[in-house]
Image (cartoon, rainbow, N blue to C red; front, side):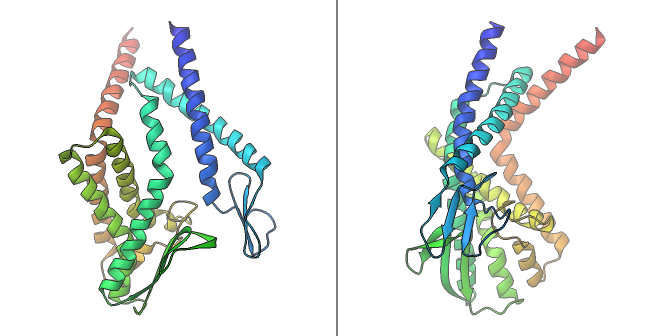
Amino acid sequence: MVTLRKETLRLKSALGALILGVLVSFATGLLPNESGMGIPEIKRYGRPLFWLLTNLNGPTEYVIINLIVDIVFWVIIAFFVLFLIGKISVKLEITIDSRKLLLPLVLFVPLGLLMDVIHELGHSFWGTLVGGRLTHIQMAYFIIYPSLAVTPEFRLGAAGVEGLTYGSFVYGLMLLGGSMTTNIASWIIATILPKMSLSNSVQVALKVLGLFGVLDLPFYIAFPQMGLCHWIFLGGCGAEPLNGTRMMGIPDFAFYLAVVISMFGLIFLYFRPARERLWKGLRRLLTIYALTAEK
């Protein structure tokens, strides 16, 4: 029985690692890879090896052998991570349904991009509300405003608002507006989700979408101050919301406090069931160790 359980764990880990490894490999096609010598008009994407090349003066190219190597690399990493999670869950007697994890993984990238659209629309809304003029909105390789078009230059998200004086209160509100809007969206999702009768798939999708909104504001404050970008490798590399509040005259301490309160409030709403199960498992594990120590 123990051997069969171990084989089942390995099989689930292998299948999950294959799916996750492929998804992560393709997702790295959004990450610039600037290692080594490069030509300015040619951009390389993919990790750890670049497999996607965009050329301002030519077609997009794919390096298939590098993509295969990247997939193998991420599958191996994912296998060890999933196997370790499986071993820990067995030890804590926590049941993890791998089928329930598949949908969030599949939705991770598209819903992340959707929340990024909400972020850029937030800049656009608040910027135009205070007198600015919206010039463009870009998402990945697509210009979605003023007209739909494809561009060879990848940008996770960008919104152009003209007519606001840099350093002014209204400019600061425009800067803050992106992350503030995603935060508001997360609160709306967390508030209405328990009151709506939705299918499990829709609930999972909304929770994943809300999670990006939970992380958007604190990540955009913390990571750029560590020398990273908004989403570690992607997005703006300046603390945009913090710069915005400073232009608005809001003290840093008050802003940090508001962000912490909002973040923990959202975590409480989104992860209460999981937190309770984890705490129950940890107490069970501590009880086992205490009984073992007494013997």
